[in-house]
Length: 96
Image 1 (cartoon, rainbow, N blue to C red):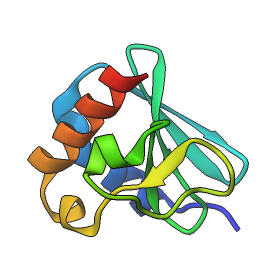
Image 2 (tube, rainbow, N blue to C red):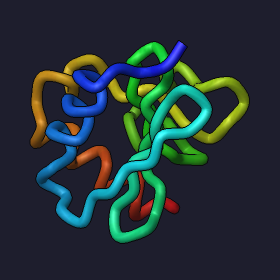
Image 3 (cartoon, rainbow, N blue to C red):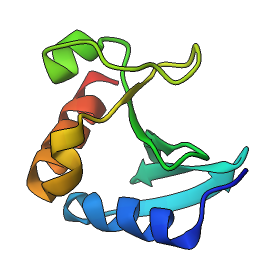
């Protein structure tokens, strides 16, 4: 299964406030980069995960982990609020 173009467009639009975004499809999903640094993963199911080793510090709680990789699900409320999503992304980038 692989992601469709509407999922890709949604994720890119959600984080567009960061600027400097690039994307790369891989393994049925996609990675999002800001200025060459990967910060998010879009799974083949369309779920968005941010890269962090400390999800509690990022989100204030633990969320679903993407397999055993250091990617944790973006909270549902951020999916409807680009400002919140960008805030989480900035925080994730600062923790890398």
